[in-house]
Image (cartoon, one colour):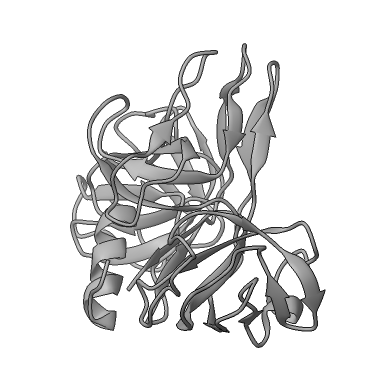
Length: 281
């Protein structure tokens, strides 16, 4: 998605900080470069997980307390979620506990309420930061139901506007590794050079790791490579490697390491704070 830096931030924040309800889902096939063709996990007790939405407070609060009384408890709010007062368009803190209608923040509220019925938005993601690309990172754990059948190998995830069906609003690869500018030579196989990727990846890039390439943030994919399709690292030497694919042209694009996670039966797939990252540019 090509947007100026401030527009990309606004777009991500509208998803993760707005009052609209948003659900996270897992993908075994990522969308193509035109954002079509994704395959979501299905069956085996799979269900999307709500990661953002709104609840109204039933009493006013001040900056001298972390305690807020809510009208109801939706059940999906978990510790670590960011809390925004959408009535005043202000961030007020982070969820510590939410038991019954008693919401407790990790510290005193950053801003007082304007009245007794301010609407609060909860999100498993922090505010978007950076530009070209802009990213929003999870601040709370996102846990899916325990699988009762093999869910396959998950390679990506996305945000949807409904608990089932609906629209895929945005997606990203699984894992929290950043994108790195890269050049690719005309060779058999094409040689990729991405300064910083070895030291910057977590875990450090190694032969056998999965990587993907994109031109969404500028540049071009070399002829022979396929955008948004995973390749396997080989011949790693410092920040130079190949994916076993011959090229018939050079390229200057972006590359990142991704996580591929197999989810067999009787497993609870849970993604810790900081492990899910959304990218827009």
